[in-house]
Amino acid sequence: MDWWAILLIVSIVLVIAGVAIYFLNNWAGKKQAQQSDIIAQHKQTVSLYVIDKKKDKLANANFPKEMVAQVPRMGRMFKMPLVKVKIGPQIMTMMCEENTYKILPVKKTVSVEIAGAYIVGLKGAKTKMQLEEQRKSRRKGVNPENAPPTWRDKLRARFGR
Image (tube, rainbow, N blue to C red; front, side, top):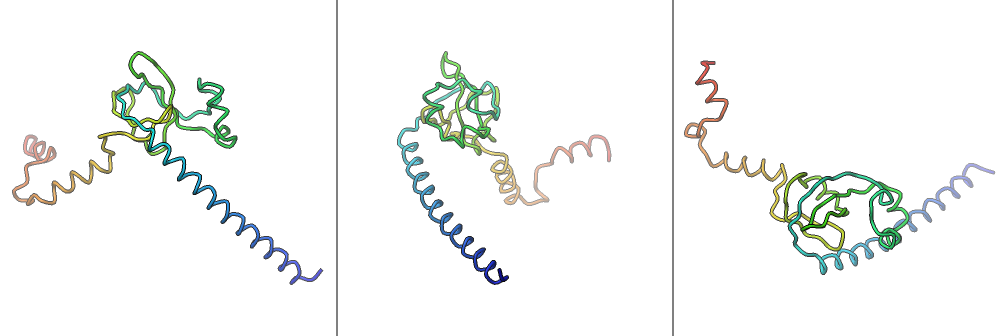
């Protein structure tokens, strides 16, 4: 077999794979948009106490079998962000979005948006980046000569450095 025939076969396979990935991506995007619409319709704001958070497989969490069966097979294989919370007198484990999982404080009462057993977002919480931007914006408006002394300036004045 000549080298150009092998190159032709490989290029045809790559084109077919690219087209398949394109259509699968469109299908998954439509499905995700539909699911996010359903979540937006059913979300509620609830105050809860976060006991613990960890990444674990759904099989190891104490979810009902019917709920675990509804999760896609690939979702059951990977570790998911799980949060153990206390809502009123009831302690339960809930799934969480990745970006919400990162900023969710442990051992604190927070107000969150939930849809079923899924934590969608945090209400009224600021991330570290937002707090830093807020501090920087406050500092920008202040003239450095008239700025209030920082803790470093106070220590230098106290100990003479």
